[in-house]
Image (cartoon, helix red, strand yellow):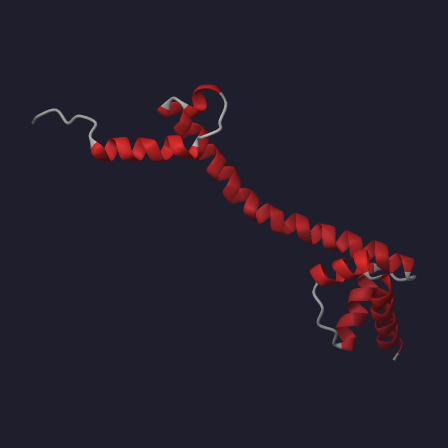
Length: 119
């Protein structure tokens, strides 16, 4: 069987990896084997951290809501329980945005939660 040289498809595959490794330091953006390892590792971390980012943002929102709730003499859990009983369908992202930017609206929501818990 004749020897197969690195033709069009091989060059195309290698160019794709080296293009993905653009900006990496040292040989990682020049040498195919090093670039392959670096790109594979980077893609693995990117895949993992797309899921981690969702967790971290939810934690941040809960921390902000808890801080604003405590200013209004409530804890996070009682606030969320009261809002659920009142039928208020605001998610944590919007609640944290209100807590950071519009304290009056957040205070009204805490009042609604207190009323629903009292009744």
